[in-house]
Length: 128
Image (cartoon, rainbow, N blue to C red; front, side):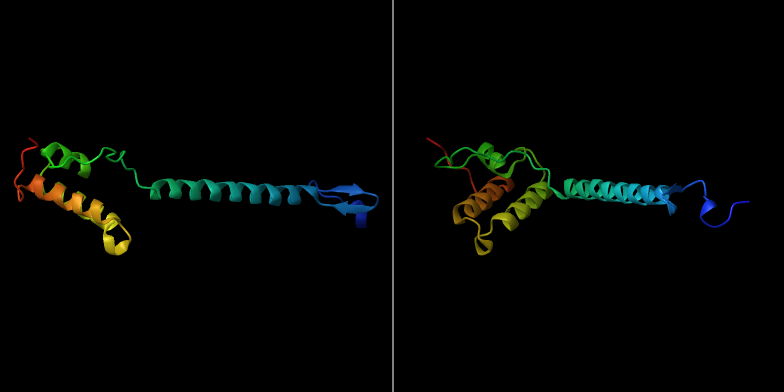
């Protein structure tokens, strides 16, 4: 049997008469690094999930008289979309572009006009 400083466990080494416990220190630092890396991965995943996946918006200029095609492009849906889809997309766009929330008056008016045309509440005017 070894006594005092001569008794050295499997996880420590002797350095000039002192017992230095390197393995627990390495395990602790390793655990901390793994925990921080896992946290960053989880945070980046939650940021990715939080970002909305939207399609490219309508970049064209507006025609003098809006057609069903242009109305569908403005709302980002098909001309044959059901009424509930048109209303849901209209609501989403109006929340994002409402003039009272700092949005553009022109964009809000065009979104409203597009909804009305797709729902048949406003008659299409001829472009000729």
